[in-house]
Length: 172
Image (cartoon, rainbow, N blue to C red; front, side, top):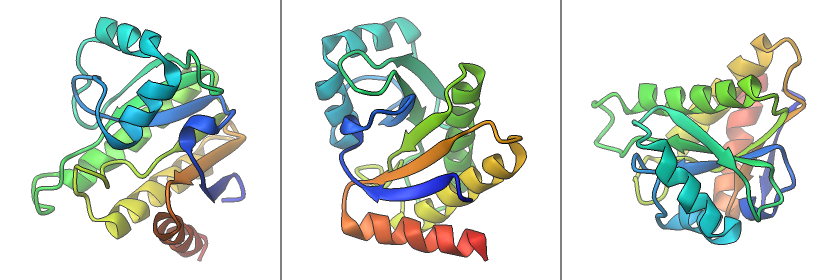
């Protein structure tokens, strides 16, 4: 897992091949990280998103980065937390896998993820961090060295601590 790391930063400032947007199914500008990404990318991002149609929960779509330092934005639609018995873990795993598959398909080697579904979607942050790290770890073990780096970009110290703990657990 030497190709995965945790940072505390504003994801819209990262100069990577792709940042991942915690998107809604309609790919419209939302709040939280989604709103920040749309704001930083400029109106062209929303225009391109309108051409893509919907993105069902657990799937991902890709656009250009426009005014962001990142070349591309991968929009991953995570699940709304409904208590854990409505397939939320499988859907969250699926959106991380879908984002990584899109990155690989398009030759993107550095990818930064926010803590998908942990904001207004209410996914318990510790469970979401474990799923994020485990899914990325699995992908990195089987990617044949494709990805140069996967970053878990956390907005605050508490989220960074959860992701670091999950990363340490994945090592052991």
